[in-house]
Length: 74
Image (tube, rainbow, N blue to C red):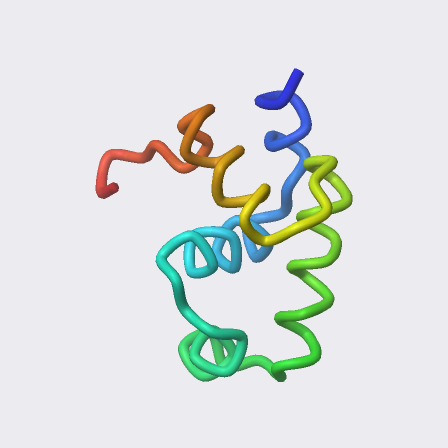
């Protein structure tokens, strides 16, 4: 169920999610992705809604527990 919801994330949302899990601030993420801080915050809010979590800690815990960012380079 969690993996199915995660599969619904857009590529940009996955980029933001990876950066959030890496502990980066919205400002750092915005700089790295060349987008506005408000855009990062909007992506993060959509990610949290799609994955059904209400806190940043819950989001990171969900990603780690379910290995949602497992890619060859991670």
